[in-house]
Amino acid sequence: MLFTARIRGVLVFVCEVDGGKRRISLPQSWTDRGPEVLPERFAVDGLTAARKLVDALACRLRDDSGDEE
Image 1 (cartoon, helix red, strand yellow):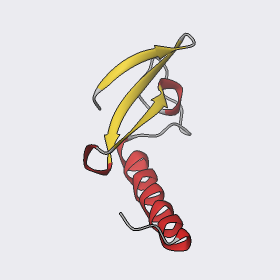
Image 2 (cartoon, one colour):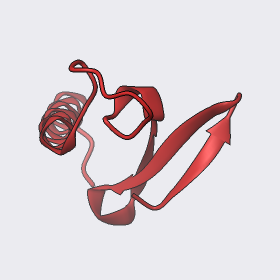
Image 3 (tube, helix red, strand yellow):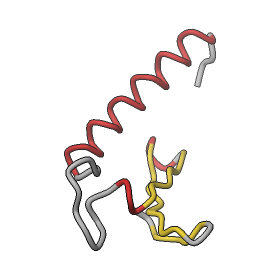
Image 4 (cartoon, helix red, strand yellow):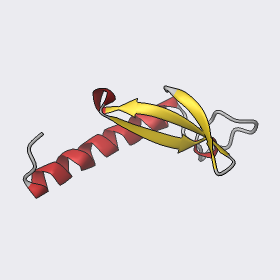
Protein backbone atom coordinates (compact mmCIF):
# COMPACT_ATOMS: atom_id res chain seq x y z
CA MET A 1 0.00 0.00 0.00
CA LEU A 2 1.34 3.40 -0.98
CA PHE A 3 -1.11 5.71 0.75
CA THR A 4 -4.73 6.32 1.66
CA ALA A 5 -7.03 8.90 0.11
CA ARG A 6 -10.62 10.05 0.32
CA ILE A 7 -12.55 9.83 -2.93
CA ARG A 8 -16.13 11.08 -2.81
CA GLY A 9 -16.00 10.80 0.97
CA VAL A 10 -14.86 7.15 0.93
CA LEU A 11 -11.50 6.07 2.35
CA VAL A 12 -9.49 4.12 -0.25
CA PHE A 13 -6.16 2.33 -0.09
CA VAL A 14 -3.94 3.04 -3.07
CA CYS A 15 -1.64 0.13 -3.91
CA GLU A 16 1.10 -0.31 -6.48
CA VAL A 17 0.97 -3.32 -8.83
CA ASP A 18 2.97 -4.69 -11.75
CA GLY A 19 6.31 -3.54 -10.38
CA GLY A 20 5.15 0.05 -9.99
CA LYS A 21 3.70 0.39 -13.48
CA ARG A 22 0.09 0.59 -12.27
CA ARG A 23 -1.92 1.55 -9.23
CA ILE A 24 -5.20 0.23 -7.92
CA SER A 25 -7.51 1.82 -5.35
CA LEU A 26 -9.53 -0.36 -3.00
CA PRO A 27 -12.33 1.10 -0.90
CA GLN A 28 -11.85 0.43 2.81
CA SER A 29 -15.21 -1.36 2.83
CA TRP A 30 -13.72 -4.04 0.52
CA THR A 31 -10.98 -4.86 3.03
CA ASP A 32 -10.71 -6.10 6.59
CA ARG A 33 -9.19 -2.72 7.57
CA GLY A 34 -12.08 -0.91 9.13
CA PRO A 35 -14.21 -0.43 12.18
CA GLU A 36 -16.19 -3.64 11.66
CA VAL A 37 -14.72 -6.78 10.08
CA LEU A 38 -17.19 -8.64 7.89
CA PRO A 39 -16.52 -12.10 6.40
CA GLU A 40 -16.98 -11.00 2.76
CA ARG A 41 -14.23 -8.35 2.97
CA PHE A 42 -10.78 -8.95 1.50
CA ALA A 43 -8.00 -9.85 3.92
CA VAL A 44 -4.36 -10.40 2.93
CA ASP A 45 -5.10 -13.86 1.48
CA GLY A 46 -8.06 -12.52 -0.51
CA LEU A 47 -6.05 -9.60 -1.86
CA THR A 48 -3.26 -11.98 -2.91
CA ALA A 49 -5.76 -14.21 -4.71
CA ALA A 50 -7.38 -11.17 -6.36
CA ARG A 51 -3.94 -9.99 -7.53
CA LYS A 52 -3.23 -13.39 -9.11
CA LEU A 53 -6.60 -13.26 -10.88
CA VAL A 54 -6.00 -9.72 -12.19
CA ASP A 55 -2.52 -10.70 -13.42
CA ALA A 56 -3.89 -13.78 -15.20
CA LEU A 57 -6.67 -11.75 -16.85
CA ALA A 58 -4.26 -9.01 -17.90
CA CYS A 59 -1.93 -11.58 -19.43
CA ARG A 60 -4.83 -13.20 -21.27
CA LEU A 61 -6.03 -9.83 -22.60
CA ARG A 62 -2.51 -8.97 -23.82
CA ASP A 63 -2.25 -12.36 -25.55
CA ASP A 64 -5.67 -11.96 -27.21
CA SER A 65 -4.99 -8.43 -28.45
CA GLY A 66 -1.49 -9.24 -29.70
CA ASP A 67 0.04 -6.40 -27.69
CA GLU A 68 3.66 -6.76 -26.80
CA GLU A 69 4.97 -5.04 -23.63
